[in-house]
Length: 134
Image (cartoon, rainbow, N blue to C red):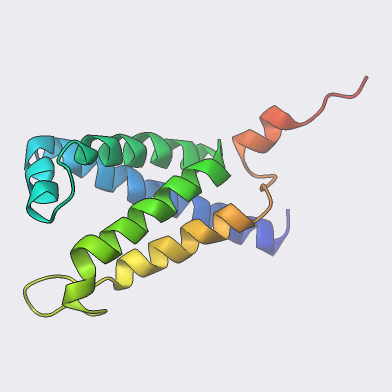
């Protein structure tokens, strides 16, 4: 294992954990509240359920290193949606009433990194796809 692999692993696990916690909080706080917020900013409320499930399941998958590229594509779309529908008006650092999109931007960048990066040897996905010697 080299430093790049270790850094890749740490970033993947932390990114997965952050998304998992965000998904969990959507359900713990009442997914209907999140659906109401989505409706209030012009996003169909049912999308809150989809986003919550993607964040929960995708977070676990990312932590384990399963389907990293596909999950990261979904996370990137979620972050783009969050930035352009909810956070952009507040600005990069926020406006005192609403948080800015600086966290969303780094989550987007990390997600894009995993879309572009090769699979890490420190992932369950790499272990599952290794070809067995004959």
